[in-house]
Length: 86
Image (cartoon, rainbow, N blue to C red):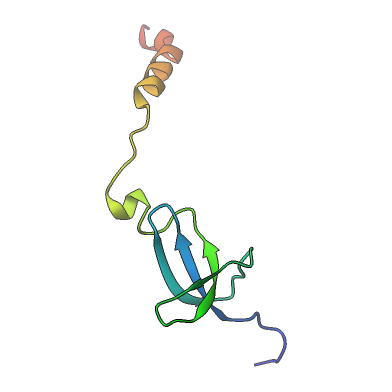
């Protein structure tokens, strides 16, 4: 491999604060802040914060959020009511 053309590959903690879930992995992604966190091995690693992870996403957890579909359905029916009467 050519030297100097590949990004750095470092260990980083990905942290989903909404469910207090974190995992350590290697990535080329850089932390936007200078935040670090101590892992179970006692070492400090940079942190990348996540909005959604497998622990908080409804597809993986099976817990769907209820959306106001009644309002959306009524809006659709009102919009196309004139076509249904024909």
